[in-house]
Length: 158
Image (cartoon, rainbow, N blue to C red; front, side, top):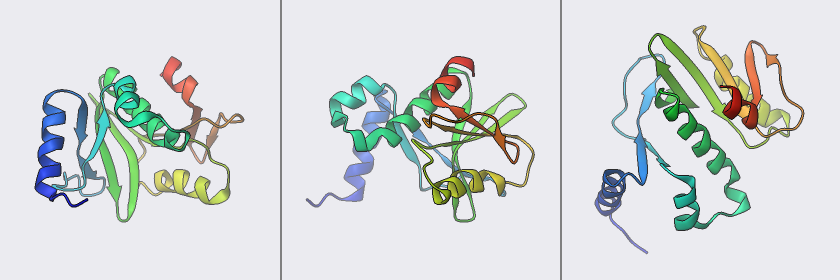
């Protein structure tokens, strides 16, 4: 099916205007600038998302990321997507003089995934709080100063 980019952008704009989805800007962590392209969109309500898109097990990572995004917004953070060189940081969260960097992964089953999730945060050259959120059973504590939280702990205690 061929759809022009302008039609897609118009649909996205309408979905944002009726509060079904939220457009999140991408920001350069080192240069402190907002990019004009590369935004991400998150559903305002996961129940509506599951009705519209239909939940399937393979989407659990996207649903988990969306859930963390909604929680951060409800806690009063301004949230952007971080970019540093060729690495993406899921969420750069600002509130007053506080900043957080957050990575979200369904599971971290191997060294490659561990390196991606923790490595992206380790590469950030400042000392703000950094958190990895996942659904792994055996987590807690920190790795090189980066907290690793189970999603339930994040949602109930953060």
